[in-house]
Image 1 (cartoon, rainbow, N blue to C red):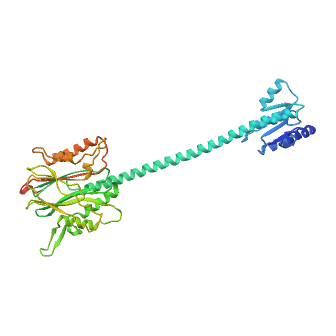
Image 2 (image 1 turned 90 degrees about the vertical axis):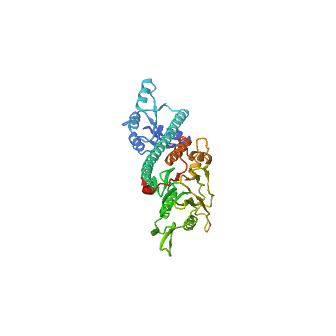
Image 3 (image 1 turned 45 degrees about the horizontal axis):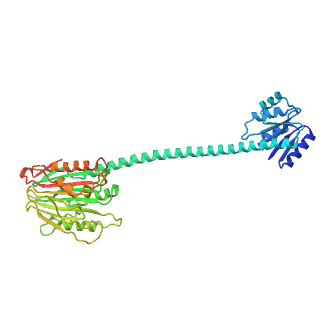
Length: 426
């Protein structure tokens, strides 16, 4: 340790210097307290051994200067004095002295006093280091807190922007859906649509293909959220009867010079050809037609849940097959199903989010429960059946969010006549 020795007596300086160096310390010796003060101000001195009485600046005054200074480290002061009265010691302590040795100073007394000072300075140094580390930690935490706060604010702003975009996308998607109720050609169409999020991978529609021939579809894109919804919207634009946009639903007959409806299995085959992608995304669907003049229902099924056929005078049952989802394999064939569809008959199409709706116990709504729900009571309107589905699902999920999109298409051959045949209720 570097020790500053201050004593105007050259013999005492020489003796104390020898004693301190013998103990392994580096010693700076001065006979002038003003000179010593200059050295102290340079900031390299932590321990001072000073005589009390000296001409000019005394050891007591030097001690006062040290205590009044704003050093970034502690300076330990030992006063050497011939004074031993209690009042003198109190005066020295008030001036800021840490310890005293009484002249004549013995080697052991000086060694003990220096050793005590070293321990105090080591403790002070350790405390100062911990305080610096604590200050650095606090500064780091403050910076981190500021960064997290700013990041949270930016994230909240980004979420708000994304939410607004999703709301806009949801509005666009809903406006692409058909009118809630369509009565045309003696057939009533209704639907129920509930995205699990803002936008959905489900889609549905019904429309007139030709006089006396109505088309309809229900589809479900794999996955959820924006990617599924984007493909769903694209499919809605493709599956339109507008032949000017290259619709797969119609083809030109060179003999008649007219666009004619395409057979449902050929429609799905063409859609499958168009949507062979590299992103492993696929979708299930049912596409069908209803010929109201022949009273024949025809549809093709591509991995979509089998619809429920509800005869006017018969037992409701699942009808159809399964088929391969669209977009998985090229050049596969899709089977068609044809069945009579008489006045009073109903057809219910739905996505798998309906039967796979989970309650709090992890139990799915299931096909059997769905069949019971759609079985109409005597005289029950189609609208009431859809409402029963919505109510049953809400009750079943017990306040949980839907894990998958929900869509249902309900078709009834009402055999309405003439003036009501093309009436649309918005």
